[in-house]
Image (tube, rainbow, N blue to C red; front, side, top):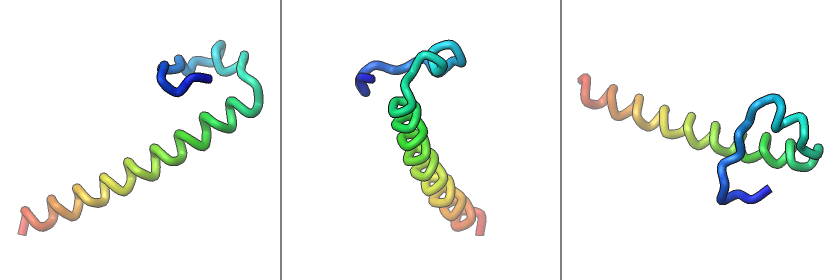
Amino acid sequence: MEKNLPLKLDRETLGQLATKQLVDIIAEQAIAIEKLNNRILELEQEVEKLAC
């Protein structure tokens, strides 16, 4: 899987991937989710500061 090209993550496409490719996608998504959660927390703290 090339990381430069976006992969359409529909059931048909995912069903054609090897287990290793699926694990790679899950690991990448877990990292992205963690980064997004951290950013949300930062923004919530900023909003709290501005609201006071």
